[in-house]
Image (cartoon, rainbow, N blue to C red; front, side, top):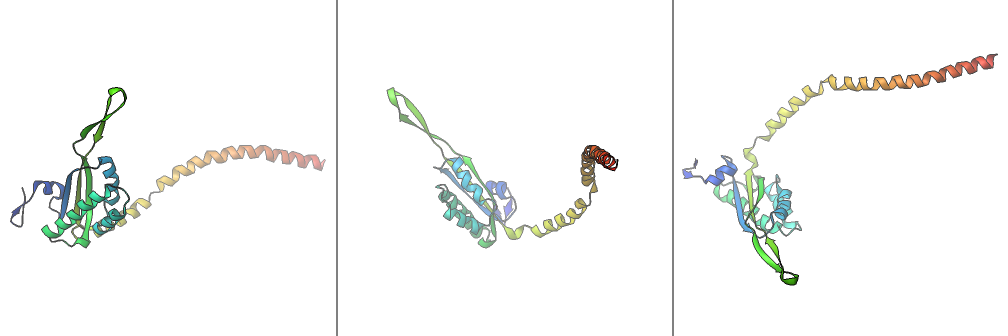
Length: 190
């Protein structure tokens, strides 16, 4: 276990965040199907935390309410435990795992019973501070790499070879037309 500021770190926190500053929150056994919750979680992944909260507040899906609560809790954990500014937080990871399924029965005709599956979810949201990530260095490295890629003339050469046979076929078709025009010129001269 890592020691942060004289305190032992949670192994789950180490697994989700490592040494990066941030926070996380989990909601377990939420009575929403994982498939429906994943649709909502996909909306907020990678967004700034404030913007993600706004998106969830106005999302029409019923699963947006529990996901909103988990995200708000993750932001509060990062603010209180790591003393981070909530405006600099970004949703680094958000995922939904399947919880236990409750099995119920629906009575059907002739004494039969059909099974109903009431699925549950475990929702996890991880937020990290944007100030801790050096993004401008990566952009500068990408800009330096793009001119070297643009100087490749090899991609233009095969296109010219492919167009050359097309010109030969059109030239063969044009040749009989030239002969007929010469013959018509001879015919009119005689």
